[in-house]
Image (cartoon, rainbow, N blue to C red; front, top):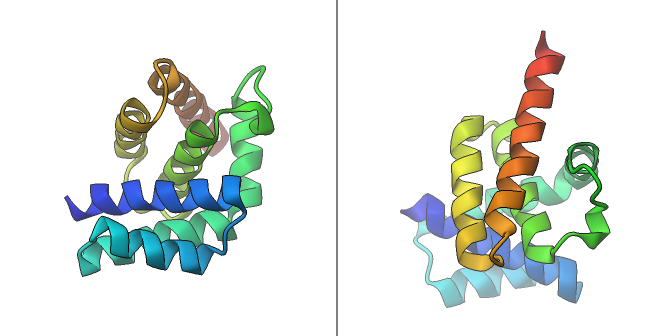
Length: 137
């Protein structure tokens, strides 16, 4: 459960950074404390946040190429950051298989997004996964 809690906290931190233009380290420290994460959960949260921030341009480019008819800045903030976490987690950090990242992202979207978020997140991540398979052959 520490990974799921870490993932949820990472989403909160990335949302704060994205919307509130908050300092990432302060936001991370506060969110980890408020959420009461275990040391493993806090470490995973930090890994996700740092990875997304480090690789954000490449991640955003990949999302933009695969989110047909959607500009990144027009996406719901929650959806955009869920997508960033899933792409980092599966493709850049190689922390989990793509299918696991998609499932976890869809679950986050059901909890934190609106009624259409889970379908949107699933569709974009599915398109990204298919595009990556095509590029690897």
